[in-house]
Length: 326
Ligand code: PBG
Image 1 (tube, rainbow, N blue to C red):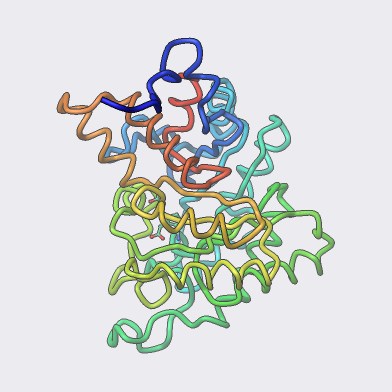
Image 2: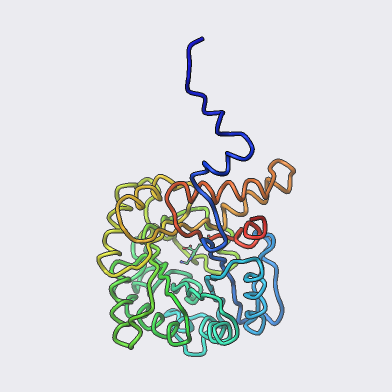
């Protein structure tokens, strides 16, 4: 037997860590937090064990729990007290995310990222204002440019409430440009944008839609979110968002789209975020509950793989658990 290369030499205790190419640390992680204006106590989210919707009054306590694990950034999602066709509670000065943001930024050092979309706020559950015949004709869904005006108002109201970063997730064309222009015009030029740039029309969002009560009442999001079959198109979406002023670009979901994370990493010089979504979390939990997987091990391996694919930041429901492990 003739061979000289023995990769196993570097797998022994003591050296393995030194040659490790990738690591996950708490400062890479962003924890999603759900704030619910209809709740007066914490409500567990059944399909996402360990997560809950919290009332505004509990938002500071919830964020402090996150920070105790070493995670310093949160992404806020809101469940409003009421919904209407224009999602007006998304851009209300006393909206649920605005109120929670004020409290959290007043009382903690957490870095607060505001998710910006209308689907939790519209009574039809779509991510923008509808064409007039949308309910009757599934070919007609969301009006792109009219929606941009509402996104711009939402961004300004979130940033004025103290949000450190704005993360538009609605997948309207031109959304980053519209938000950048509005923020700059309001004297908020220092507030960065993390664009959900390559966001796919994915079935892995199922548990989130229970959590945030944002499932579309009819139709689906295929007219605005990306087709899971497309890889090249992700680079185009990302390029457009960077041209429009995105400071960070995101790929979502993460694990089924690691090829896209890698492509994006190689195609732009901006930090890349990946969203390890609700379904990715729920399926590991479900298998672990059956005793089929070791939850801590697969959670850590998942995040490590997302980093290895090229992500700098990871939005994940495992943030607290994995940070505690590290
Ligand atoms: C809102 C939004 C969604 C998610 C984040 N922001 C739902 C959707 O687009 O249907 C999904 C997050 C998750 O599944 O963890 N547009």
